[in-house]
Amino acid sequence: MSDRIEQVLNEALAAIAAADTPDVLNEARIRFLGKKGSIQALMSEMKNLSKEEKPAFGQKVNSLKTAVSEKLEQRMAELSAFAQKEKMAAEVLDITLPGTKIDAGTIHPLIMIQQELEDLFVGMGYKIAEGPEVEEDYYNFELANIPQDHPARDMQDTFYIDPNTLLRTHTTAMQMRELEKAKGQLPIKLICPGKVYRRDDDDATHSHQFMQCEGLVVGEHITLADLKGTLEYMANAMFGEGRKVRFRPSYFPFTEPSVEVDVSCPFCNGKGCNVCKGSGWIEILGAGMVHPHVLEMNGFDSDKCSGFAFGVGLERVAMLKYGIDDIRNFYMNDLRFLKMFERFD
Ligand code: PHE
Image (cartoon, rainbow, N blue to C red; front, top):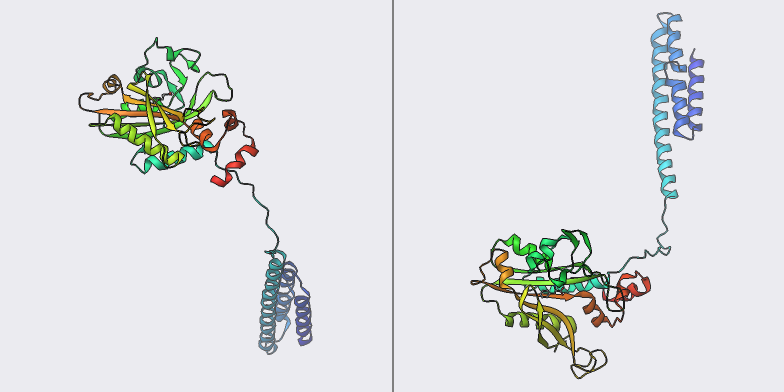
């Protein structure tokens, strides 16, 4: 009987040593330690032995079982350490290889101008307002003092979706929403940048889609001088130190008085060049004092408060700043054009 035990031990040790994967090792475990395995078979032979032989035999089979279990465990540990090592070797990274360059986009020049203006005005305590591009007639025209029969409503200028809904033609629509929302509460100090749409034929200086940034301040004792100081500050920040601004009388339905604003030419410093067509001045925006009727329609007492507003075209600013001569460049998505602004990011 002892020979049989010895034989099973040798077979088991050989099978364990030969197992080169966890699966094969598991098969060996079942073959020797399983319910129908060789060691169990030895156990069941006990019943054929005499009473005297039984204890010694039992002990031997138990030691066999312990020895085989220990060897199995040890081999399993070896195999998994080996598998781990192989996995690490397979997954090794060569960090000396050159990387793949990810072609990142650049910030669009118009967004750059928008961000520049936002930083500038947030620095002066303005908040940034937002509003829908698909707008109600009421906010785009009615509240801005542009009644039904006003020429600015001409079908040629506006993309209508239905008689009461349109693509906003100016960021003034956002101003009106903000004035209405404020319910007469002072002060108001905000800018509203965004896209606007007009039925224009596209050419070098016109685009049916463009961007504006509007500013609005309403409070007590706000005057044209505040507007001028603010715009002068903006012109210096956007076009370089030493810019002057000048006001020329103009007309907008929602401001009274209204002005057209020129900046002294940043290219010739006001002396006259081909960019400013010899005049020394470049027109950059429209502005004015908020019309008292607009304040009243929005629930403000125009005897107790006043305000100024201005609206600047971002394409115009970008074209001047970067020397771009065709507005359509901004909307062509030509990477050669867009990549030029990488260095300004
Ligand atoms: N809304 C005007 C435009 O689109 C610009 C403007 C804004 C003028 C605010 C005066 C005050 O041309």
